[in-house]
Image (cartoon, rainbow, N blue to C red):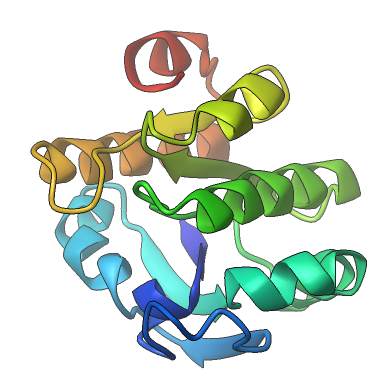
Length: 173
């Protein structure tokens, strides 16, 4: 199972919390939370091919261009599943993650979902019926390991074409 991760500048290690204007980029292999996820991915013979990232401010100001480029990059890399997040309680990143996952699904270039915390209330309300939104704790909260494991389970279900409804009921908003 080939995976692409989508992060903001913080999760990718490409900038600090205040660097919201980091432009769209790519890092090969696993970085940030993707490294923590590798043991769970191995259970499903999964591998992170690349991590795409963008500052949420840059994304907000260049949304259509970023969505087009995200879809083009995913199409070129050809992953089986795209995981957007975990966005934790970062509201701008949570919105970006849901929008990118939805755009990738609509473009038909890969299966995709987003992962964010309950603090992203507006995004959850707007996207929960459009794209799977996996529950994760807020930054520093309890339960991250279980959430990363859940993300891998859902990715595998999407990859195999399994019915994801039981996974959505158990792990998603």
